[in-house]
Length: 462
Ligand code: ARG
Image (tube, rainbow, N blue to C red; front, side):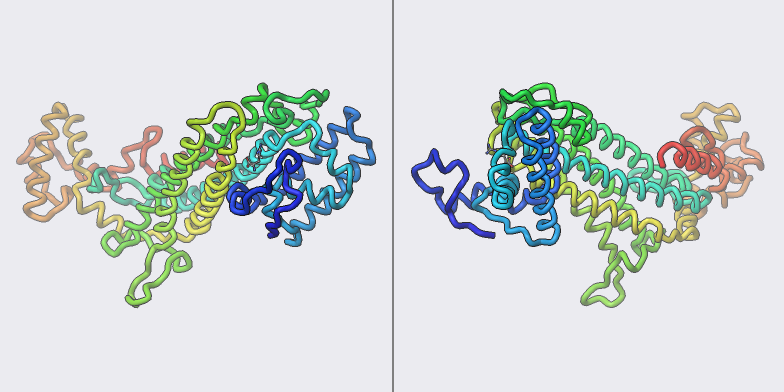
């Protein structure tokens, strides 16, 4: 990276050179060079359009194409000489283009400003990031569906307040995670609609006096349409805020999922075995197998929410139209995209290797009187009001606690002591299997219902 203060941008107007520190302080090339390929894509579309409206000759246009192609290759090979003196990715590319092809390079910026250029680059960049994040969410969803199918009959305790509440199937629990990801993906798809609008042509803020064809550039770049207002085009970053908001929700979901995996993998729960390849040992305690991947994902959720707050604060005080503040949008955005891609990838790779421990899940479900509600429902079906049934079951649970027995282990005679309406058939509903099998309505935990939900989900979302 070169920093010599010569040929600086807009130098004709200035009588003094930029302060050396200010040059570095205001530059963005260190991070916005990431959008180089998008910048090239945008310039190719812009040059095509300028030629079509007669501002560039075909030769000039072709020279620009050729120069940009070479620059793209230099960047790919890591040979491009980035310079802080050229401030940002846009000026770096333009300077190199002019070096390569001469005067035609200087004509490329006709009818365009870095303000609409950067807004276009960010949108192109985000479009491809969002599509790749959506693809990895789908991969994680597929892994969840496969595991849920495998574990459709596996009974585990369902919790409220982290206390055993009612039995559920592990397949059903996994499908809850699948559903969250359905909404996460919808949010991104919705965000993409607003990302995919083309700001190019807004120029600095007021549009341009050239007879530009924005429909053409929009089509060439695969945008759904040109933006409707030039001032809004260069100043709007709410699409980026939306993306970090959608990203924060995804990370919040992954963080909750992580928390469960960490708990379940502990010796106290021992519901699952995480794959060795996704855990690490301790430098001092030889017996340890730490669930590092879920822990790290849980930890990384904070930075994405931080980026959401950064972008909200970045925008809240800005008058129209473009302000240099906006240069601060990129690092939060890039880090949000990286964090989402990496965390989702780690989960998509890990989930297929999660091993359930059905015996432990089953005995944990047996311990917490998980079928107490089933007994109350049974009494209601025999004609008792729910509140009274609740009372009767409370007494049965008390006896179970005192004698260290599950409800299904209490004798019929003892149960009849609490209510004469109880008969032999009570044991069908007091079993964990009976409890889950009874919940067959839409959204219920019965194994067959879960299998049907998995089938519907596969057809609808994958
Ligand atoms: N590097 C700038 C950014 O990221 C590009 C736009 C600069 N425009 C300007 N008028 N200074 O926002």
